[in-house]
Length: 129
Image (cartoon, rainbow, N blue to C red):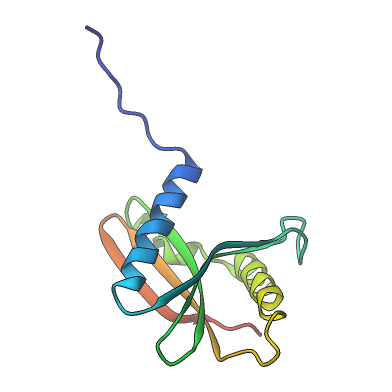
């Protein structure tokens, strides 16, 4: 019998798992799911924009959530990896999403950061401006 080597999940699979974990974590705290992986093909960069999760608070606030996961908090941790360029792409996608609303609700940009088993929910992590 051979020895089976446990393979590390692909970046996409790991990202999908982190997003699912974040969504369940937020739902357990009373937020309602609106959309997942909302994408806009073109935007402020050739990559366009994407919002990992869009959820709604009980008070009606629409929350655009970026999910980041790292094995541990070295090199600044997961939250520190949401830089200005990424923020611009998230804001662009959020603005596109909001075009479907005649009167957009209050909005916020949050980050859910997983550093190993630790979860950090950063409400109002950045602004659209």
